[in-house]
Image (cartoon, rainbow, N blue to C red; front, side):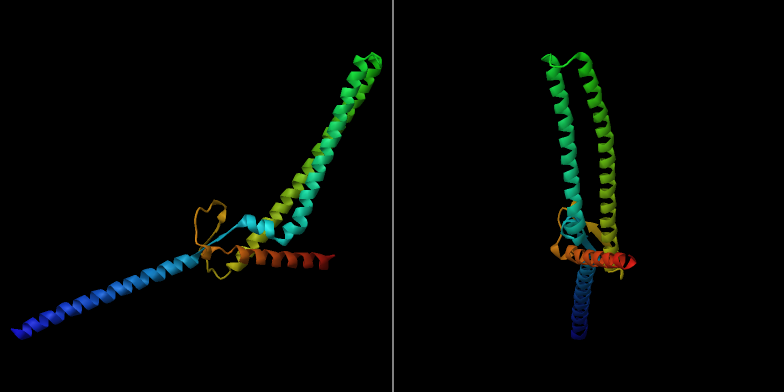
Length: 196
């Protein structure tokens, strides 16, 4: 009887130890899966890469300045033409010029307004095209940087942080992407200089 009781106690102990080791193994596997999943994911603050990159600091800032100057210049020309039209109307209303002379000057101003509008549209289209080319170059640099960073397939998913609500800072690879973008930009500039 004692042998049977001892065997039953030993069996219960063995089963509980086996269950405990299974639970420990399951916990370890779950932790490993969590760690792997955390390493599989990353995010990039693309707006920060864009604003802090060397391409933006050199070419992007220059392009912004060019856009602002063009907008100011166009606004000044438009204002000047509007002022000329107002002055012409005032002179005519005061009787300082004849109707024929007022009509001739009005036609001249309208021709200059039409030429201004055509020129303004050309300038704005050219600037828009430059902006698109710059944005495409920036997007290409960022994609190439991410492709090189993830060439070993370490990340299963890299997301843009603009729509990210919450994430651990450990998943942020923005600085790595920025460094790679700057490296690729420098290499592209060197290659362009050597081609010339």
